[in-house]
Length: 358
Image 1: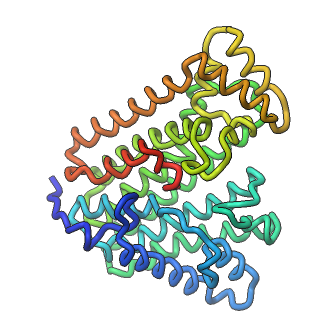
Image 2: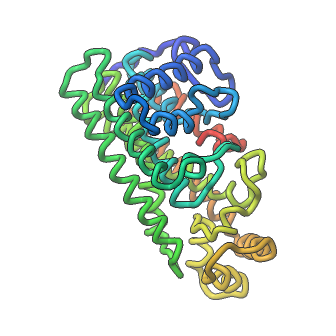
């Protein structure tokens, strides 16, 4: 058993959803800015520098709202649980956040989203071709950051960590391919939905946990168990986020109520409802999801009322709770997260913080 050596939260934790340690948060943000600028320095005057800096708000900090850095926070908590410290885990935490942001830049292009956190997305400001290129560069910087191995970790460990990150990247692309295919689908099975969220969301949470364990010196078996734990929490996270996407307030989600339905997103409540037997409520949803284009406000309200009549919200809550219980079973079986910090981080989503942490 890999012994835990817990560090005081005031010396380690960044970006907690409640009492944020502003000093460590700033330390991480400075490290992120530094690694981006250093990696892009060889590009000289290439427009790629401006484009990536625009996404991260580098050079104009007053114009950007940072996310809560959930994935690096999760990685740091795992490293702490396994006896590691901030410095040992920093390269991996930066790499995970960079990979996540590369995926966001590409998602914005694929979804046609022109705003993120209230400001123009990269593609909206510089064009889709530049957005693709900027996202690709962030992906490269992610791997370069992990491979710089600034603490001199054993090369075998760095190789395993790089493999974890590459596998997560591939799985994210596979999940995104499902999601793109769903846009024109007349029906989506629960198995396909689960495969989609496993790739789009859960895998990177699992990678964050596994990388945190590796950074602390855990062996491959224990890091793999942490990966399982992160994926279970990630599936719960996405199902809960689906609920908020339909019933959450703008304050909780940062977007108007029903936006996901207006864009005919195949979220858990929709997939569950359409998998049920024929009924007027089910048929009302099916008829609107068979259309092309954006649904208007009246159609959105019709779908929401039909979901409520069918009990889709309760079904989604039950599925979210089951995935949370699966995470608890994994943690108990492998004796992971013994201070409960990882569970607490995800549990904070139950009060509506979950969407703000993305």
